[in-house]
Image 1: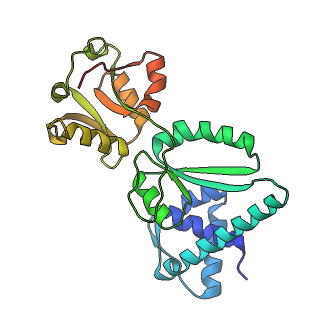
Image 2: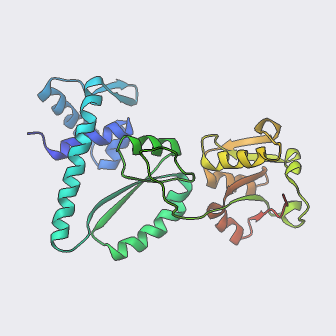
Image 3: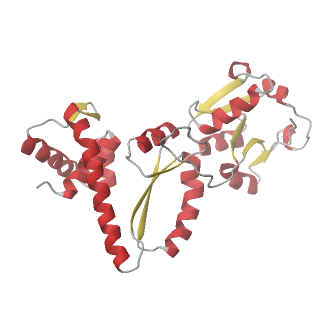
Length: 265
């Protein structure tokens, strides 16, 4: 009978679509991971992955067994939880898919408090894009997800967890840092730094600006960055202004490196 550890290797490789990333998560050497996969393929006479350079894709056989492997792993976790409950202790692994800002600024605080109450639980946070969270929730690859926007799907249940705001930040010496006279139309003359299009922050900002008749092509976009900290640093250095999460902006605002715009809408 195939070992549970081997199934975990297969599952993580399938999730990552990259053996190197799976090796890091499992703390395995490249040869050990490859040996696990090859053992499964040899025993059952199938090819589970199609190698494509550094990345891999599940073969037809791999796609067929993936849901069954996921179910076996879920059952094993339930068994572990059952043993914990015998001792009246909540335990096991807590896997959470999380968007960038929440994964770096919100979840560490919440989980540190959570672990004080449930020390036998082992949280594992996977930071990823919102679309990846959506896909993995539907595929049952992760049990929970934290994102900046609600998912509209009949198979997903969403609950509010935390209220965050999107704020407009400017360099510390920018006129908008001191005078509350800016309007949405004033954005058209300013160098703007944006998040990538698929981010919840960018979608929310673009939708709000649309209410004022402003479309993305009307903005003077000087830079597009996928990392909110990189955006904060670019604003700090005077590259432009930007809309970012208030959580991300908090430290820069506290040290006076950037300012929250007092523009009015």
